[in-house]
Image (cartoon, rainbow, N blue to C red; front, side):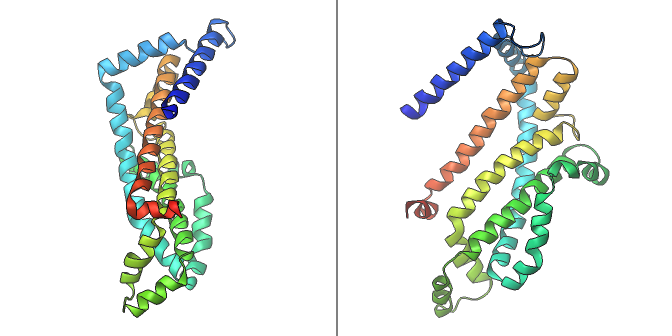
Length: 250
């Protein structure tokens, strides 16, 4: 019960401070809308269907970019973590590209893919791919060697070791890495939509800003935060899967 009561109470406190600050004129005129104006904006956006369309567009891009990154990054991370030579050859460059801001890729994404979904999906892929590779490689390199000795005794080789020994052993750490990566993907898609597309929550915010509709800007921000909480909670539930949970119960 406390897990629900405390967030609700703190949320009401934040709402009260917001309302009091706006009523007292603590912010420049027109920069911070009143809670009532934001609520009205929510009602209008939901009634028009635009908010739902923008949410679906953003989630669609995140799903494509994130899933593609997972499919390609996890196998590469397993190989890097398992083989020292491969790790030595690739890890410095993976760290190099991971250090680059995903936003820096926006000009190339637009030139290569034009405007629309592809550049946004590409930017999400770039933002999450290298993080997932590093998380998978680090977890894979920490697997106790006794696991591999047992695998050799069972006559497991190559791909069987990677997917029947290493992958199950690193699931707890991998789930944690994916949980962080999905948060990054959700933040990046908003930035990408402010530049490369004409739909989604990021575009909603920049379009509202250009029209000086700060109530819609806050509406978009609250929606982004709420969905971010939902995505994090969904990945947190993965830790309850028995094959994953063992890693958190040790």
